[in-house]
Length: 116
Image (cartoon, rainbow, N blue to C red; front, side, top):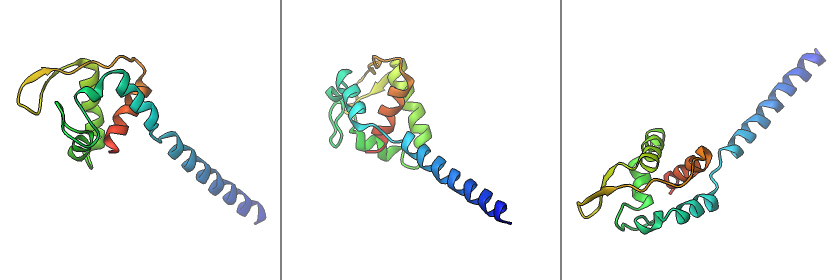
């Protein structure tokens, strides 16, 4: 009986450790995201809380609220393929392609935007 309780306790403790390590691994590094955005001149067209040439990051996050996976996919496509995008004034231009091949950096940036 004691070994069954000990085994159950070990399993429960392992599950808790795994849950916390997964949550910590999924945390957004805001400083790294902002640095990548700054390095790539993203703030030329976007701001966190106000509309510039492009929508604010808060507006983008609101658009994908509850649909974060879809938003992440669409934003990664925009920053890696440079499609035509419609600007706030109605004109169109090619979206800038981000200068990194690091998937983790791109994902962190997109998740940071979605967290606004």
